[in-house]
Structures are given as structure tokens and as C-alpha cells.
Length: 99
Image 1 (spheres, rainbow, N blue to C red):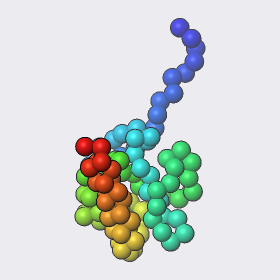
Image 2: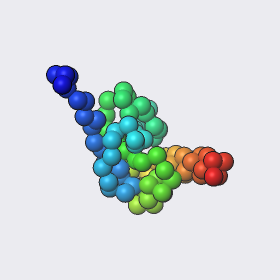
Image 3: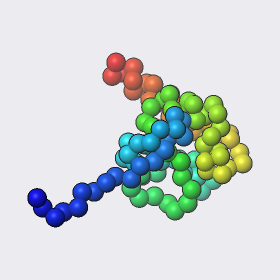
Image 4: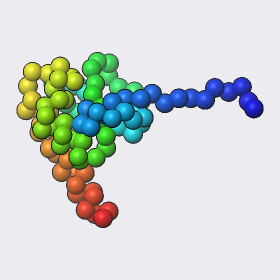
């Protein structure tokens, strides 16, 4: 056996379904320059971030419950709701093309 250490991937919690997953399996939401957006899960702007699974179900749950605003400590929900609605629509279009 080699003495190399096995790299254990960090775990994050999805705000939509509250389950833990590998960081690379989740979208990273972050408040940047007055807008909510996805940032790279590896490198991003410092600050508060929230994680969601890469599916429309978790995004819808997070949008409907308003948990993203709490996770990012935001006072306004309109930017977040608009952003997530667009992302959900994009994921549903991709799913219909694949399916």
C-alpha cells in the first residue's frame, strides 16, 4: 500500500432537501455585487454561500420556502426568486431534451 492520503471531498448540505452531499455534486449560490449567482464550487468570491442539488426539485423547494435568503442572510427575496425561477426553467428544458 502506498502512503498517499486519500482525499476526502468536503460535504455540504443542500438547502432544498437538507441532505448532505459531496461539494462537487452541488451548485454554490452566492451574493455577489448585489446579485445572486452560481459560483464555482472550488474557487469563488469570499463570503456567505448556500448549496443546492443540481435539480429543479431542490431549487423549487428552496425558492418556495425562502430558505436561500436565510442562508445568505439577505433581506430581499425578489432577486433570489427571479434567479432560481430562470434556473429551474433551464433545468426543465434540458430534462425534456434528454428525456
